[in-house]
Length: 310
Image (cartoon, rainbow, N blue to C red; front, side, top):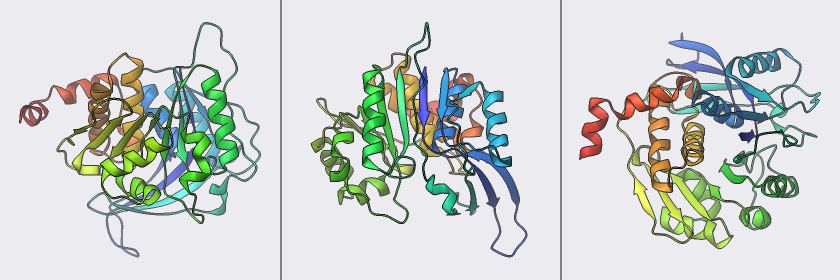
């Protein structure tokens, strides 16, 4: 079982065209870091719990329905607030600009873990939006992370850039010290460590006690730095990017899935990169991933095999 905690929301995605023009496409999609990860994990066959602030409004009803249809168990937090809705403008290269509201601050919401489930154990817990609500307050982060570790789970945190605040790593030292994995992208890694070189950025995270640092480098692949082993790079797969939304969340989900299946760190980073590559080839990010077979077919496709043989 895997627990994904963090934001769940509705994305209104506008693709193509300039502001004021007719867009190529406008769609509503379930999103948010935690929901994206949970959706991909469920598609890959994992038993998934989602710990998010989902209200009883129309947006919340959409998320609840999507979760149920995907086989995701939503933890009942009795959240009385509104469900976040984001506006995302995606250009022809897959880059995006977003606009959010005060609802995204999730004031008063504290994520929780499921109680003991007979016959099941929690393999992984992910803090899907470290440095953003609901994982902005260091105390809330530490309490949640400590509870996850006390249940015997591996703990992964996916970082986000701050909005309206400027958190420092030193404020989260206790949390970082019990993380098994952290997966920032290159922009986030540089922001929090001050180093653009992934090797040096990873050293900073390690200095706080993080065991394994995986820095996502967009079209350059990813840099993987274990605490006690030799670091390495995994190149990115060459695909046509349609929509980059949720690629990092898909990477994290694929990574956890592969580790739960018993693969090693290098194999899991490779599999995660494949999941991220598939996710950007369609609109909606995480919703592009439909099954584990889809990833297997991608990895055995002619173009992919030729790329890996180079």
